[in-house]
Length: 362
Image (cartoon, rainbow, N blue to C red; front, top):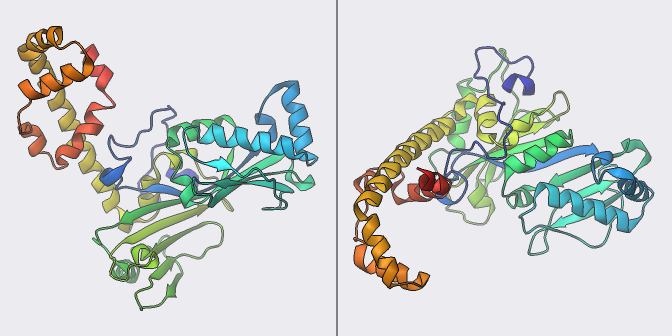
């Protein structure tokens, strides 16, 4: 919950729910990819866990002991096991060469993206690390994690400690700017318990991008607002990134942040509440479309199901059948409930794909 991440938070502040532990992410339908990924993403992750959770049994114990002693084969085997566990369907891979000291661990394997760029590491070994291993994923690495609900389940099973999580929202349309962030600060909207946080600035007004920091980077939490598009090389870009950086120096970071990062971003920084309001509008639009789709399919099956079945008796291969149905039955228009939906045609995939089997059962 929100108070778990900030124990002495104001009781009047919104509390973030944290009970969902299933493998299906509670992110609103259709908010994962493309234009609908409009809330917040996990943009940096570091965690530690006990090596004993990896490859149980006597064989696993020997592998872990060998890894601690510096056996490169065992280190690579355990590192592969970790990467596959948290991101089984990703294109991430390990560097085959085991490296040395990293984050106070004796050995580490670099995590690489498909282009060979380093996007994190798995580290282990060292007398002072008390039998733990450490994993770090940069923003690019986190972008390759396709199922955060699964990753959360794995980390909970390992009793992992989240030591840093960054949550980022991208305002690519320029709805807000650094001037708005400065105004929110001047109006006291970032003030908690009567004390305004420190504010810092970086960058130049030459089109290369500027940054405003709300709060000091002392291992607790900090909001970083910066001109992402300009920093990527487009001097005319209006792309603003709002990135909350949460550390575990003074508190525990709950696993729920991996599945619902926008709620921690808005819960800790109330001026960004418009992000959650956007989520509510999206959820409503998808819910209405799902109900309309269910009704439409029921009527279509009753009115056209027999005709479609008759076509299938003549055009027996899948390709022929599809072509015949498209040619004979498809009209060049969309249902009124799609055209009037705020998401338009983009609402169809999040409505149909997750509930396809459910529609069959109905």
